[in-house]
Image (cartoon, rainbow, N blue to C red; front, side):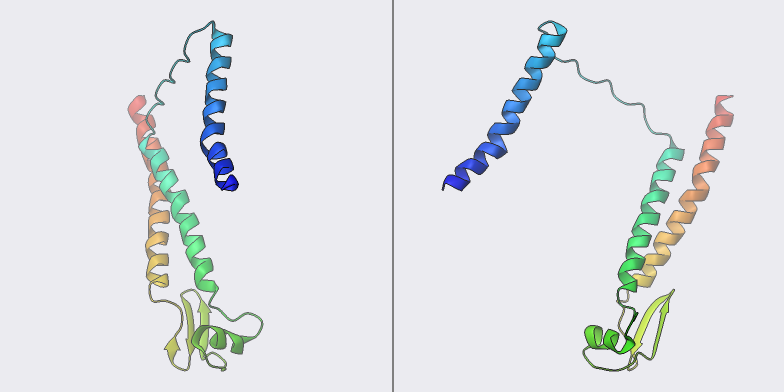
Length: 143
């Protein structure tokens, strides 16, 4: 029970105390007035949005590819079939792109890994090409 009360104090009391202290410090610095709200940021340009989409697609594609590679045999190939499919055998075939591991005629890598990689790759390349094109078009419009 004591731990629960302590956690409640930390979860509720500590942030409230910190906020009250911050407002008091701001008021003292500005002469007893409330802090002014920040002005809204300018909108992102379409070129920046496309660049962010490209970055996210590259990161998600890299993570998905690493997940797919976790099925691959590295040091001891027979262990890949043992840990993934449940029987001790050397894989029939394996490849890193497209991600594939075949043990006794059965594909071990989930079916959605390669289509996901394809979609993310097309998205990343498309957004990478689109971003500078949109930036150049916006620059020409401003002239």
